[in-house]
Image (cartoon, rainbow, N blue to C red; front, side):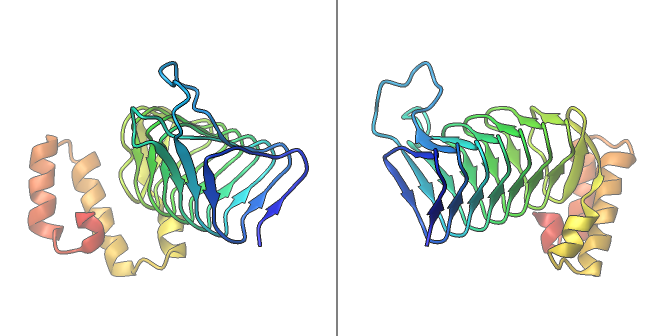
Length: 207
């Protein structure tokens, strides 16, 4: 059920599940752009129902990582986006045009990287988080937040939360946790203690 358009390159070792679309000029599974790579047989593993539009690049893992770049299901990679070696992508992520994802990055389910964004090596982007256009991150992005510019968390990704079916009660609790952590000027340890005490029973807050 996969569709591979003209001039795409699939290079192994690579495995791909069902119903994936690979647009023309995309390159999946080429060797990592890593100075320490010595032709080891590392891999890319791709799940089902992913869309790779024109000129997307996805590189294999390295032995310095876990030897594998992995992509889950129902993700969309728009034109000219790049996934470096040893990246882990969950399900239903959206990677917009020209987004650059360095090696060893982890993208959790449903996150969005907007156009012309960049994510530094080993950063984790939390579930349903969104990095706004032209933004960059050298630090982990917590779940459910909107980040803009350079490492600047500006609010909750309310549109993404509602689209994902998160309850109003959970969103209200996340608002309170966000205010405590980012707006009240507390030291992080004090803010986390307060959040745990007041809101720790809400699964989304705990996450």
